[in-house]
Length: 171
Image (tube, rainbow, N blue to C red; front, top):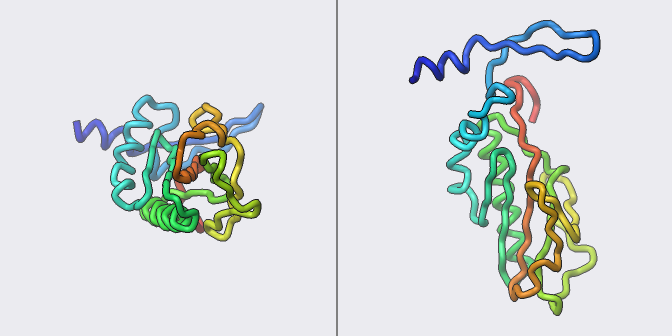
């Protein structure tokens, strides 16, 4: 079995073909072969220890990661999510994965009577993440009034832009 996996991950090459043109074949030194049915399983094995690094709730599906936190205090939720985002980023960096804060979404689920400041936002990796009234998560659109029964504020961050980084590529 180990020999099969070694063969699966070594001596791989790739090239890009567009219309009539194609690039030269280049060796692939990391990552999983695209289109393989094993990709989600292998990726999940690779990032299985990520939840241990976060103080927020974390939900993972393949390369989609969602952080969530609930507390009556918006400041507490902000601290939890910022800390967990930074821990997630550090964990992914150690695996040569990149999280794009610019592609991160934020939504707040709250009771109708609870007010959130109009200018509320998170700053993650020097990117301002404004709160949306709806976000798409794994193909499902979630609306901020979806969970009106909540008495605590719940904010979810969805970081869907996780990708492999080349060894010499800057973070």
